[in-house]
Structure formats: C-alpha cells, structure tokens
Image (cartoon, rainbow, N blue to C red):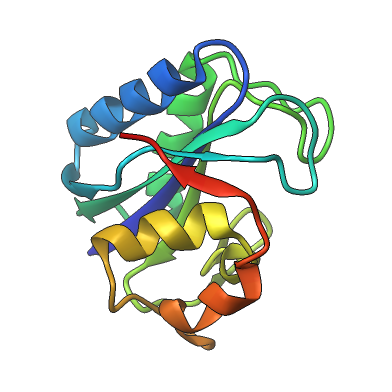
Length: 157
C-alpha cells in the first residue's frame, strides 16, 4: 500500500526531529521510504509558537492503516511528543494523510486527513513528491493550491 505521512515540528531541534522522523519511517518494519519532500518552513496555522519545519513522506507499507498509525505515534513518543491541548506546539507531529485511495473513519483515525486540503504545509510538500496526488472524495490535491496561497510557506534548501 502507498501511504503519505505529513511531518511537522516547532519545538526543540525541529529540523533535526523532522530529518530523524524520515529516517525512522524508512527503518520501520513493514515500511519503505519511497520518497521524501524537501523541508519547508511554515507559520503556525490554528496554533502558536515558532515556525514549523514540515515535510511529507511517501511510504510503501505492508502495515494496515491502524498499525501504521500506531507506528507513527510511537515515533512521536520517542521524540517526547506531548498533547496538552489541541494544536499545541510540538516536538514532532506525524499525520497519516493518505492510505492508498481508501477512506477510513474510526474513533482514532480519519483518512484522508480531514484538513489536508486546507493546509499549504501539507499540499506543497505532497505535490513536490506526488504531483498527481488525489484526495479521495475531494479530487486532485493540486486543485486546492489556490485556496491556500495566502498561507506563509518557504522551501528550505
């Protein structure tokens, strides 16, 4: 299965945490890192604190969606992720954006990620590695770029 994971951090060594998360995703049993976007700097959206460092990873995985979510949450915990309140600043955030063309709605998982089409920090890095990406139920991801054009984002080299 092809899955896309959004990665973000704005506490501590945010850049280092994102780079380490990419390595850990590639080393995760049942996963192969097929592609990774460059790093992007973005202002917080519906949050506070320092700017975020963001990326998107494409995984080839044999894990089912819930097992992949559990693996993502374990990597977050290894980075000291805390959830004191919704959209709190974070050492590392890993979001399962897309899991093939599946739509999943359970108590602990919503795929596609319900706000991914509203976030430049998801769309720009996603489209960098998957320019033809489709968000199930919504359409081509590229079609949503105009609606996020006002969000501050810059690719880091």
